[in-house]
Image (cartoon, rainbow, N blue to C red; front, side, top):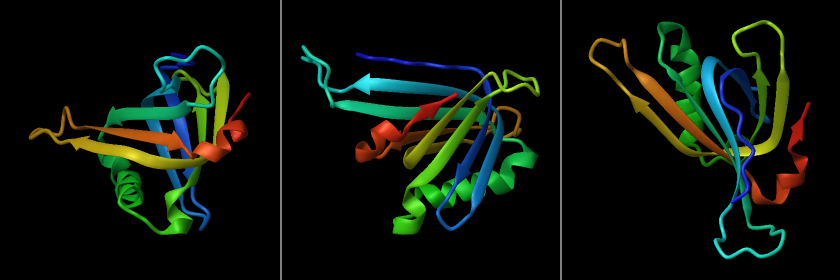
Length: 139
């Protein structure tokens, strides 16, 4: 199993072909390159690039999370695949590392709603479109 993981505070920008932008802040992000065939003996193209974004649901996030919700249920071709930019800032203004994914789609989206809104959180799992794996960049 091949992994490249980065966890920590990040700024996430997701852009659709139609220009709609989703901005998520104060998130925890995991980036994983995972070989899904278990009996691999040579470098394989059986690899998924998956990004998992989690965060607390705050009043300031409501409009952006509505956009995520609508994206997750969309099947319109101009909306399904989006460009994803992750800036790892670790809670500072300085960008330590950036990632760009050209063709991401929603694999899973979950919201965990708490009565008090204190522990409400979300999880967004994205996957890179298979034929665009080489388009992934890091800076």
